[in-house]
View 1 (cartoon, one colour):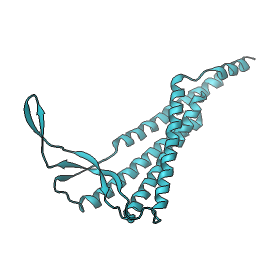
View 2 (view 1 turned 180 degrees about the vertical axis):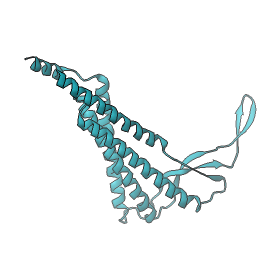
View 3 (view 1 turned 60 degrees about the vertical axis):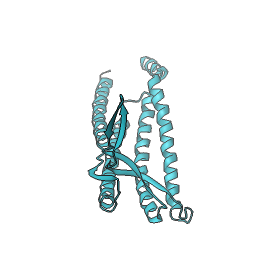
View 4 (view 1 turned 60 degrees about the horizontal axis):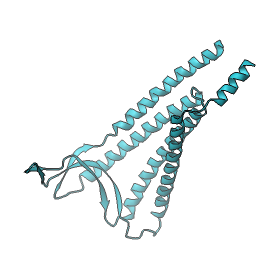
Amino acid sequence: MQDQQKFYTMEKTKTPVSIRIIYWLTEVSFWLVILSAAFVLAFNVLAFTPFFGNDLQLHVAFPVKFNVLDKGVLELHGKDLQVELVEASSKIHFINTPMYIARIFGTAMLLAMGFLIYIAFLFRSFIVNVKKNRVFEPSNIAYLRNISYGLFGLWLFAVIYTRIFHRIVLHSISFEQVELLEDHRRFAGLLLLSLFIWVLSHVFLVGAKMKEEQDLTI
């Protein structure tokens, strides 16, 4: 009787508002990732057809920082101060993009979206469990651990992509008013997030063992 009452009480426990908000934000984010992946897939398919012709204007993130050699003037408190842009970031525009370049970047985007879909799906599954008050479950530990692996894979892909881009483009491109730097993005935030979630999975593992011991004691 007590077990039935305890089960009934757990069923009636309301999910906190914060968890419900995170759940709905996760749902929206997940389907936005799916929609983005569909666009990327469509782009890759169309890149192998005459659909774009010679009018494709591709913009991609430029992973190399640069200094602008032209100086500007800042008017401040009645004085003119000389300023310049340093360690800037931008996008690169391939004017009338050749199809072979579009296919290369399309494939890279498709690989990146694969990692994002994998991570988004696992996080969505984790939040669904939390919303159902199933926190210290073996499946949640597996979700967190696999999310950390997915983030690490995404970080590794981003670093390799940036290195290749950096090596090929940096030594083959020139500007009159721009100085390209040897520095390139390292995506340290992704790596730290991966390590944090990996540690969090071990915290959940300890919590699951404590919960199991408590259930056995009861």
